[in-house]
Structure formats: C-alpha cells, structure tokens
Image (cartoon, rainbow, N blue to C red; front, side, top):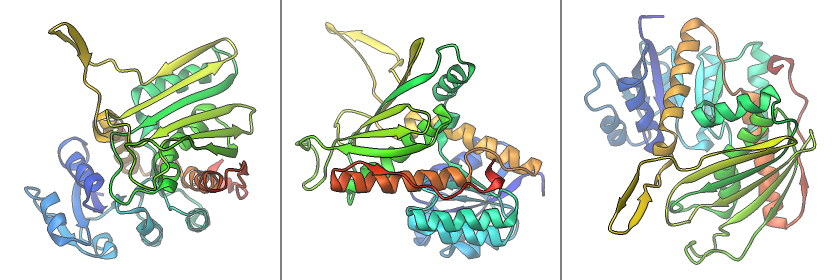
Amino acid sequence: MGDLLGVAVLGAGHMGADHIRRLDRVVSGARVAAVADVDPARAAEAVAGIAGVFTHTEAEAALDAPGVEAVLIASPGPAHEEALLAAFARGLPVLCEKPMVPDSAGALRVLEAEAGLGRRLAQIGFMRRYDAEYRRLKALLDDGRLGRPLMLHCTHRNVSSPPGFTSAMLIDSSVSHEIDAARWLLGQELTAVTVLRPRPSSGAPEGLADPQFVLFETDGGALVDVEVFVNSGFGYQVRCEAVCEAGSARIGDDHGMVVAAGGTAGTDVPQDYLVRFVDAYDREVQAWVDAVRRGTVTGPSAWDGYAAAVVAEAGVRASETGTRVDVALAPRPALYG
C-alpha cells in the first residue's frame, strides 16, 4: 500500500460526486485512483481538477485500474451485488453505500460470499452511526443510566421526492436508515413490522402513498415507530427520541443560528441529507480509510446490510397489504459475531 490509499469510486452521481470531493479534499490518507460511471461526461466532470484519475464506464475496469487498493460503491442499488462480488474476488476492501443490495435474496448472496472468505471486506454506508448526536445517544443507552429502552420515536422528513420515487421506496430507501439506526441503538433485531397509511398529502405526487407510519417490534420487547414524510415541503428533518424506564433522550432538534428581525425569529432548516449529515459522512469515510490502511474493516457489516434488506422487504409487504409482517432472518454467520 502506498502513502495514500488508492480508491476506485463506482458511481459519479449526486452521492458519488460528493464522495469523490470528500476523498480529494477532506479525508486524509486516501486519493481517488479511478472512477466508473455509465455516463463518461458525468465521470469526467466529477474528477475535473484531480490529477491521475482513470475514468471508465464499466465498474470492473475501474477495479482493475492501476493503483486501486479499495473500492467505494456509490452506484444505484441494483448494481451493488455485482460490484461487491467483483471486489471480493479481487480481495479489495469496500465501503458500499446503502442499500447493500436492494433485495433480501441478493443481500444473502453477498453475505454468504463474504462469510465464505472467512474475513470481512465490506463496510456498509449507514452513516448515522457516525453522526455526533446519534453516537451520544448510543453511548447514553449503552451505559444504562436511563434504564431499559422501551420505545424509539423517529421522524424522517424530506423536502420533496425525486422523480420516479415509489411508495415502496419510502420504506426500502428512506426508512432503511431508521431500520439500521434502531438495530444499532438498541442492540436488538427487528422481528415484525406494521405500516399504517394516512390520507396522502396534497403535496405528494399522484399515486405516492406519502406519508406513512411504520411500527417495528424487536426481539428485546421494544417498539420503534417511524413517521416518514418525503414531501413535507419545508426541509430535511431527522429526529429520534428514546423513551426508557428511567428517562428519555431526544436528538435531531434544530440548534442552528436563530435570526430575529422584523418582529419574527427563525432558523434555517436543512434542505438536503448531505447538509444535515455532512460531518457523519466525513467521519464515516475517514474511519473506513484509517481501518483499511491498518489492514482491517470496521463499521456496519454485511450482516447489517442483509438485516436491513430483509426488514425493509417485510416493511414493503406490510405497507402494500395492510397486515403485520414477521421478519425472518437467516442464521447469523460466525464471522459477524
């Protein structure tokens, strides 16, 4: 390994371009060695001004480019399974944006492929685990001062949904973050899901069931509810309140600058997840680079990616059928503890 970890970035869209910027300008110990995107002009734009980067239209060509020692996958979800398996075949450590794989069958194939190697190569991009507020809440729950967690109340709001966003994506794209955060915060698996749908907001596109109310049960006897509203119209808000036997704790309240003028007072509301979680993304990628340079892989595992896919799939069924759906996970391989 050279002085700087050579990273191939797969995908140069909104998320991929931001990671390319982060690797080049923010993170220490790494450099962008190659980029792959089906749109060569988009790839060229993302690496403009960065010297020595190979650009490709095929993912495997980027993995085989000179100087590549690790992979960051930021391509659309359906391309993740093939890219992960290609990285595993080359022994390359991977940071894969969520979803690890959109469907549970594909996620299980990835899980089994990595378990078959006998060592971890993949870290999954559940960046909320690196957010300062989430980490404080996790530490508070772990030290037991508030007693046993009974409930998590979660809110996930976006300004608007992108074109092509479906009712299922409210669960398997948006709520997937709450799925992982709940499992991590509580140290429990999610065992069942129920979804309730109020009358759709007038701000939602025709045919989109938005908002939705999602209720998870856990194997530790806790309940987790999530209000997901992707066309709120006013801002990007993520909040979580843990209610425990001896107290409660809430994160995600707005603490930005308050401006008072003209008889009113107000504060800015973030409009994008890259604004709200910019520090979390920075910490996540830096932690990944540091671990890879030490010869290890840490953070959310392929098991976490698989579990999120299974729970999200159950959530979509619950939303579509209006019934409570049980979550059935495969046996956990010894590699993942």
